[in-house]
Image 1 (cartoon, rainbow, N blue to C red):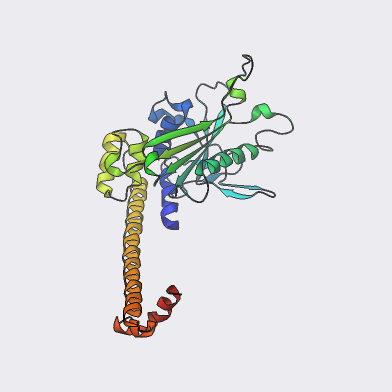
Image 2: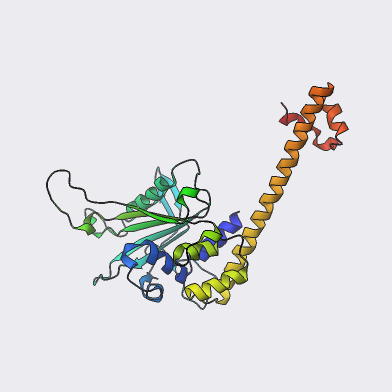
Length: 304
């Protein structure tokens, strides 16, 4: 699983893929074309330390991160999947945004996932103190985005993109603040669907294709090239193939585990039937079912 996660992160860090995510999920880039975003708006300038997200890429442009860890006293360490700086379109002064992309397989990890996304946004804002601004210069705070790619969402969230941000609401009166003064964070949930239910175009189809465990590499290559004009470089090809192989391995492992669990449940049911109907001991029942003696202890513990 760790190898698969690492491969997915490297795949997401491809500039052309990031450009598709930015265009479809971030308001500021919706009017730009993919090529323009990939070549001119994903910033290579490091903020804290120069950390290549793709250290094995030698010929194609690299995305230089601003560090993938935040460590704050008393709050622990947060490790981001992909984090980088992008130029804000239309900003004559070269204003930047800080973007974080996360790949998430489990939509129900024991807490509301959107709360984690908002927490990541807050950490990216608080981490700017001492690097982007000092003292009371809060006007220098950069807007942050945390975008979550949810591979296995519940059915009611499949094929959806939902954003959560700060908005102005007048309670009494009609006062208005400049949007740039409060529009400082946004968390976006990108929930994929089943392969056969993918939209005909857009980032949902792109990401669904990349992370599909049912498609072959050749099928993915054809869709990437024909539908998204993403040509297979040697490096990208290697990463897509790796994700294909690892995802296939996870599916096969899951099937094997499911079969094993089914066999175990069947043996337990047979053991209890023999013990109840024949009055045999657990040991006599296991011997009758030809359960290897090396597995007796395990079955005894499951029947306690």
